[in-house]
Length: 388
Image: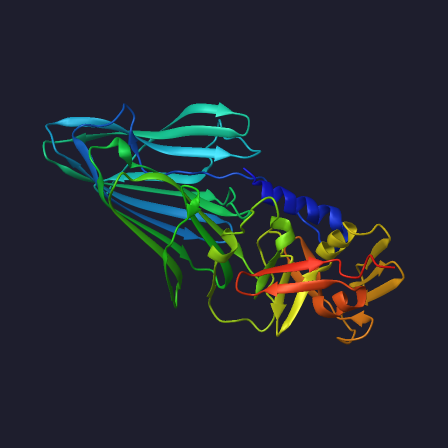
């Protein structure tokens, strides 16, 4: 499932300068599970007393372990519990599970669960992992579910990697006394996170320690119902977004001030090589210098004039940008001033993106720009570029 913002950004990237940034195709799919539900309506005697969800994210996917406590307030009974599995995108999982693995336990004893498909369509499959749990009168039972899933989905602000969890606890008797959610990020690096619950930003506590970063949220005495999405993307220091990309798509750009940037591990001396296949940001600031993606700059220039060209030498990693009568050369060995400007190459798995210093480029071309450091946004305007 891809957001309009993401599609817009990807389109810009591919049109801009494909020689400057090689990208691999990536299918949007995910295995989404969550709180179990009784398969026949709302149960009148069994209550879900509590649940603790621990999600550990890495660069390839995420592992989820959930511990539930169920209490029987009535007589002897049994219930068929269904753990939801949903997949979406351009890959269907009608035959094989979207989960890389799935296991469940009752009171510490591992038990089998049967996967039953309830619906399948173009790009989507919904299934339940079923097992029957018996309860003696007034008995309390501890249920554990563990599964691993690929990253998938998007957040409102366009993150291509996200982990999800569906709360479906309102089908049990009464309210859930307590739900504890933990998201653990253990891989070193600079990260951007966006927790979203039921379509709005979710405030979570953040603790950063020697073993990584942990986001926490606790709900008490609630229906335990709703969709949770946690966008997670690697970041370069002081990443910024072009406000122009958000115009008409996210009018108030509310997601960007709410995005959480955090670091796990020590600050590297150089920009890291990312193993994520993610779109690089349009701009970032390093050592007091703001750099703009050359492909993004070329795209913005294309909105103002057709009298331009961009050439890229893959061997020397040098680029030449011509706009009207003005020519700019970007070379890794060039000084930081003059008409030859030193770029920064942001390396990624499957390709690299070339960035150039914004201020001298804007001055040479007659462009104007403003930096909104608080909200990690910048504005780029044509300035005197179109004036003869």
